[in-house]
Amino acid sequence: MVMRPYAYCLFLCYALSMFFDGYELRDITSPNELELLEEVQKASWGYDDREVTPGSLMVASVHSGGIVVAAFPKNSGTPVGFAFGFPAVRGGRLLHHSHLLAIAPAHRGTGLARELKLLQRAKALKAGFDLMTWTFDPLISRNARLNLGKLGAKAVSYHADWYAIRGGIYAGLPADRFMVEWDLRRESAEHPVTRPKGELALEAVNGNVNLGVNPSKLELNGVSVLIEVPRDIEVLKRDNLDVARAWRLAHREVFPTYFARGYVATDLASMNDRTFYVLEKP
Ligand SMILES: CC(C)(COP(=O)(O)OP(=O)(O)OC[C@H]1O[C@@H](n2cnc3c(N)ncnc32)[C@H](O)[C@@H]1OP(=O)(O)O)[C@@H](O)C(=O)NCCC(=O)NCCS
Image (cartoon, rainbow, N blue to C red; front, side):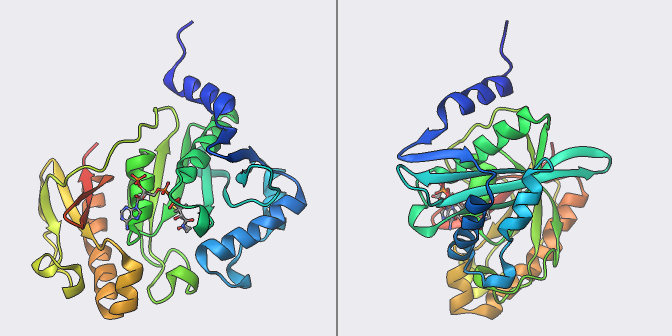
């Protein structure tokens, strides 16, 4: 029997990914353990209590088709990262919508985030889903690298004011989000950061994101279109909130225009400390 790539991944995730580099990765369903994820959220997003998704909601969800996978340092009962999602219906199609992914700051840069997503994917496939969606802030290029370059998901639409969240790491700017789609039947191939190739639809003034953003070019038709994003929006917000807001407003115009014309964001490319979304037509 020939094993399909996603079935092979499913097998591997179950067989191997339960332990990763000193961490145990497993699903959790007990109320006491789910409550511990509230602290991971506060550490990861800098949220106050009212912005935290309560453990009790995750209890209800895991008893209704939801999935929570968490990472524990070896011999510790305290989770340091997790992913949480639930069944959803969009346009008549059943899918798994992932609502939260977080790694506590002290455990970042370890590859845990990708491993948790792969385990979540394996559990979703086993439950019968072949599509996972989630949202992320288009201005956070770290998340773009993870979601597009390391997981192989695609950003397919732009939503201004998706949330009313105003606190934690999102303070200061409206909470716009990309909607991401992850085809669970395709192998999730991680690739190194690419160099930007394509026509520039949006870029920084004089190549410096701190100086602001040039007017968008909305009529390009190239195979690849590039849209610049500040390398570190948190630093830019701290140093010059008006310029950070200008980037948000520019993205609000340029991304929906290209998405409406059939492009999707497939990768994040970098060169000399400048960072660009790569948009292509599937
Ligand atoms: C998002 C999050 C889970 C990622 O965890 P992480 O441990 O930082 O993830 P990883 O280190 O495995 O992957 C991040 C990648 O982005 C890269 N990266 C980091 N900062 C970057 C930046 N400013 N621009 C571009 N890439 C960046 C890293 O180098 C790494 O890629 P690499 O493995 O090729 O080197 C974590 O940062 C987090 O909890 N953030 C707060 C919660 C959040 O935003 N959740 C939403 C997730 S969609």
